[in-house]
Amino acid sequence: MVDGLRNWIIEICTAVIFITAVEMILPNNNLKKYAKFVLGLILITVLINPIIKLFDKNFDLAAYTNKAYEYMDEKKYEKNVEKYKQEGMNKTVSVFKENVENLCKEKLKEEFPKNNYNVDAAVDYDKSNDSIYVKSIKVGIKDGTIESVKKIDIGSKGAAASSNTSINDERSRLMKSYLSKELKISENSIEVYKN
Image (cartoon, rainbow, N blue to C red):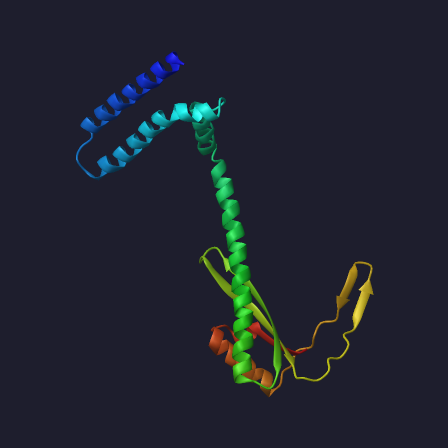
């Protein structure tokens, strides 16, 4: 116990002498405040080290420092950053898609209030421009009548419902034109079909 206390006092004295020497060498500029911060962290670590060892006998600051250094040196963090970046981008694209669909439903309901609408937007992320864009929008019109039963083809690879047929009347052209102006996308990217 006495040897431990003596070593701790020697470490504190060494750290204080080191910190004083470094502060004397540093010029008076913006770098000095950052250096003082780092040197203060070193002093705090030296002061707290024995207290941590009381609670955790296996604690070794050098081992933790080496692990952190290896982590940074091997650039493992870059893989994690890329993974989290991709997950974040996927969530952003998903939220953008949902917002576009909700916006389309609201705008169509305001402009064409007689019907109900199903909207399915296809959106994607363009890495070169670092932007999310709308590839296409499919608008299903429910006119309040009872929906017809969809023909289902059951094959060996699973069931698939037959695709909806596009409408190309005056009302659909007005909807395409309206959505094109509101969302600033091409009319060719918008499809209107009877739901």
